[in-house]
Image (tube, rainbow, N blue to C red):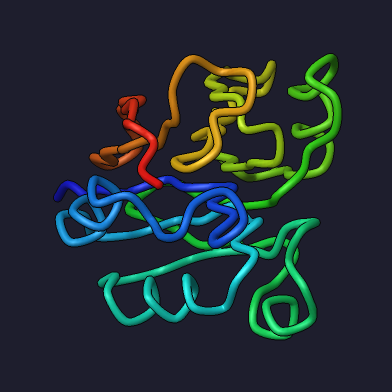
Length: 168
């Protein structure tokens, strides 16, 4: 069996964009699981993804107010096939990230995080994969807005970083 995932973070709607880009919404329709690593900013985006996604896992971020914090955890954990997944918004500075993640998330195979708006794909000393999909709406210092598509087949995880045109 193969499971497809869309990895998102830092959507910041409506502060950085009026809405999610069409490419994101099309991807939501095509995947089995949507994962959002926080900084939604508005509850309408959460409502949209809850209603549109087949399965949604998300966490709140530092820019998410009381309404989102009441509905979303700080850390989400779930399993897809043979892969233990955790989601958190912020992991701290890039230097030492893998070491801190190994200590904070024993037993996790894949950690999805956000906050920096910078795509990230590394493997820790323990073998945990760390993924930050960047932001589909606010490229910050990056050349493009981004999201990630992942395919899980048993314990194997294949990831593709997708660039997006920023929509206003």
